[in-house]
Image (cartoon, rainbow, N blue to C red; front, side, top):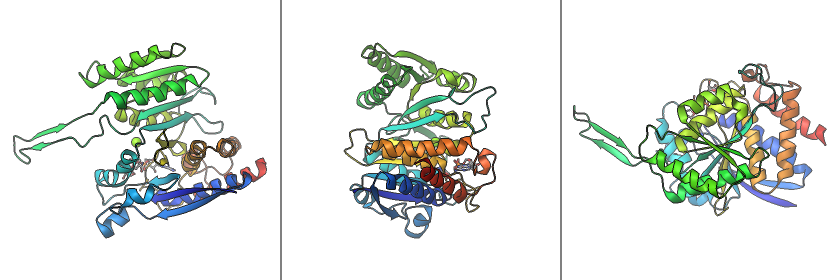
Length: 356
Ligand code: NAI
Ligand code: MG
């Protein structure tokens, strides 16, 4: 019997409601493959911040290092400014563990009502590859003459050759492994003078190494419109930290609900643990109501198993999701149903058993 060691940070709001369902589904799928999990729970959250003044302890990263992977719910809650919760937990983990790839699949499932007209399951099936550790999300810059009429604010974006090339390489490799072999790059080189022309140049150079891949690029403004108007065009979409963040909410929204979308923060070299989470946040508006959709968390768990080398567990979970959605069995309110978080989680577990 093999064992994987997972650090669990349920976090805030609905994070604490969806994570138990993710664990339940992973346990059920793991049992069939004779895999055991060792779950270690960390109560790091905004609540912890209120008690201790920190989102995680000073040696938090050190504590996480030894795990095979990190399974995260969501962090952030009213009462703690979002930049404190994000920079106190999520971003340090992504950066210290060099999780430079943020991989987010976008897929239209049979059974989930699509807000776009005349789209069939299969029409929308692509990946957003987001650069995850540099770019626009930087703490460089500052405020001068604060509080006066002369107030000056500057915010620096950071694009390194190393950081740009490695995310592009990951995206090109992913495109290479897919049938369509098509890569779209998000840019804004008409408005952003230095970093985006640089990004375009590195894309063009990388493309020379992948002659089989069809490459196109779009300015981010028209790209968002194209996600809505022709989502079937896309296969692998690569973007900087900010553009990737925006696109990876928009993509899943075009497939019906952001609540089923997963997000994998990957350190491809496996030098450090990677982190898997749903795309959505802590949803304070529905927290405590027991109606949160756990599928984003379950799919994130599936991606975690794929990364750890258990593709059969990934497939078992995805098949169960597909079949529960297709049969419109126990859907939560965001997908037009009335089921509770646990009812949908239980339907997945039942399907895993039934599917065998
Ligand atoms: P959100 O994703 O929490 O909520 C947006 C909307 O989607 C809400 O109406 C919510 O009810 C709905 N929703 C989200 N997840 C759902 C689910 N599983 N089932 C059903 N409905 C769902 O985004 P928002 O409101 O911008 O952020 C709330 C808090 O979460 C903030 O503090 C924010 O910083 C944090 N956040 C954390 C993230 C993370 O931990 N990676 C990601 C995004 C936001
Ligand atoms: Mg986001």
